[in-house]
Length: 426
Image (cartoon, rainbow, N blue to C red; front, side, top):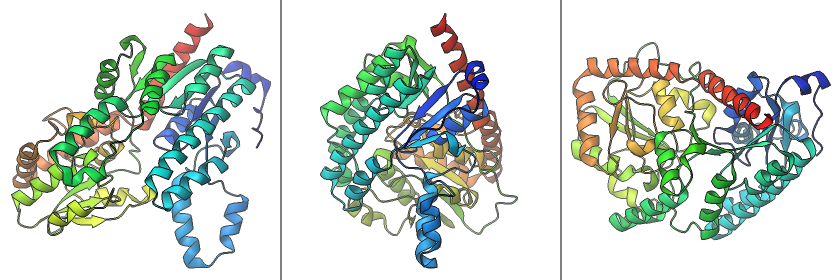
């Protein structure tokens, strides 16, 4: 598929041209939109994007209604309404192997498919960089090394968006966790290959700039010998228009919410233990997300939480609005978008230091140590017993989210890119 040309030579000369490349999604749509709004987006490159109109969207209309609804729900995960489709470059065939392997439930095969997909995607992006000669390229960890080599060849600024803490740090924490709670070991990844760990370090070392969304990410990079001078903290944002407090939070029970994969990487055992031990009257724990691994360890807690399978992102805002408290006990993150969305929804948030949040402890939420059931219990009980405090912390959380909207992210990122490109060119 050939990439469309820019609309005019004048635009090409006036503004820096930036390519954003991610084989999946994460927050890359928001990054692309931020640069589009700033007039800097040259291409958004991904493996699959659901364009409309397209052959696929027309084909869906010919299918039975029940199937069409399910298919559209899945496809809309790979789309955002306001991104300019003329600037989107896709490589859908390389995604097919990964999807097939994942759906077959073959973890070893899926791992190989992801490695092949990332390498193929990285190679395609590198070719595109050499062809289009952008001013800057933003890539993501584990699929950026060839693209960054291409950047060096043409003199473009290379930027690595480090979405989570360094993978070597993650492996250390996960191995410790598997020893502490072996019943949850099948819900965490313990077999990240050496090549991937080394590649993540090589990408960070090769990049001109490493974007870290939190102090936690920055600390893990420095811990793994990445020079502090090239790391810039740019916190992610929240869609404060879609994620907003409801007019009234008025239901019979107090609802504690968790959103994310049901994996011990997210520290869910500590939350489950806390809620089970508290045994609160007129309260429920709702956990939204897919079960990672066999889920056998969850049977011990089956009477202490309500599970809601994965909800498409375009529908998740209503889940936040139905809750009273948000808890995110993650052991290793970058900067949790779920926490940002909960804060934008006016929820008091209890999150760990490793969640990489913007929370100011005791002001607009609570920061707790990882692996602390007691700390989770203490903060839930405090908010359960004091509705005035719960509402006040939620109000402040909303204010904090408004100061860290995607619009704020757009301003910080676009200004950083402009400044760095000027430095490169001079």
